[in-house]
Image (cartoon, rainbow, N blue to C red):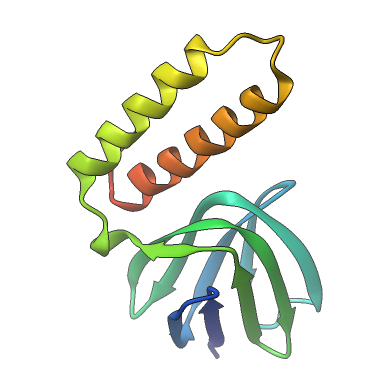
Length: 135
C-alpha cells in the first residue's frame, strides 16, 4: 500500500504522486510516515522533506508550513519549496557561506536581526542538503 503525497507551495505544486514513505521536518524533529499512519496534523520547520517513491529518495527543501496525514494521504502546505534536483549545489553552498558569515557578524543585542539571520541560515542549509551537499 502506498501514500498519496502532495506538496503545495503558494506558487506551485512541487510534488503530487504516490510514495512508499515520507520523512517530514516537523518542528519537534524528523517524523516518518508510512501507509496506515494515524491521523496527524503537524507544523513543519524549515528543512528537507524526503519522499521515497519507486525505491528512490527525492529531497525537497521546505520553508516551513503544515502537514496533514489522513487515510494514507499526506498533504503538505508550505511557504516555499524546491526540489533538490533543481538546486545548483555550488550556488546553494555559496548562499550558505554568505548566510553563515552574516549570522556570525550580527550583534546579539539586535534580537530581530539575529532571528532573521538564523532563519536565512536555516533556509540556506535546507537548500544545500536537498541538493545533496552536507553541512
